[in-house]
Image 1 (cartoon, rainbow, N blue to C red):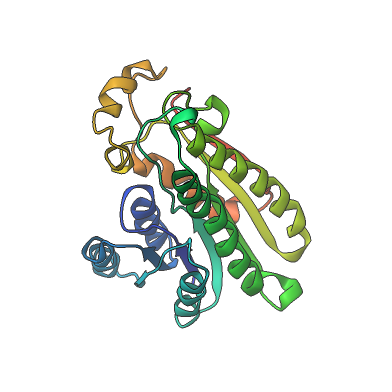
Image 2: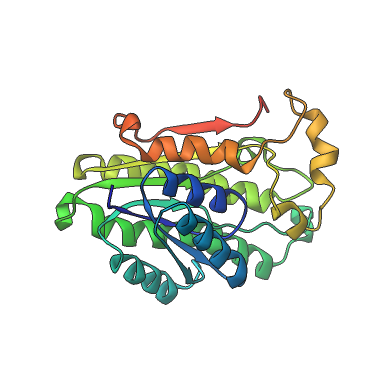
Length: 247
């Protein structure tokens, strides 16, 4: 395979696991990061050590010009074949009546607008309508979209509900243009995102409440994402795979 995969937020957590697994399956990986260059470069080195090819690009998906720059960098690696809209943020636990406009704007701009901007760039390159060869988009949603995350981050849950609707609509919009669009909805997963939201003990508290009695790993989410990117999922579009240990 000589096609390029863009993975947003690819320096850690699920994005890192996707980048590593996709590279093993033959993708050329262009991963974005916002601040931690060392972590992003470490992923690139690990991919290259395994015989793969990768590039780390600094870019915030909430900034339109930086999204454009990310995809321009990807163009230099080869034809774009896939996008994983993984970059996202949470915030500190709060009730809705405690949330500020600044918090909501940050959440929705990164989680929703960022995914739209990246998908737009991908469609312009991959759609047969635009002379492309087709491709695949996988959006990261969350079981929070269904559960609502009351008392914690209803705003995050709402942003992922928007991603579910976005996945459904875009899938139909480009279905006859050679592009498949699907989503994966993880449950409680062992990543750094919990600490970034001020809850480093969240896994220990909630893990036992999951039917499988544990949190999942980033690798357990990367596997279905990379499957959706593959030709084995050639008839899947508009799907949303829940991977949550039964939650």
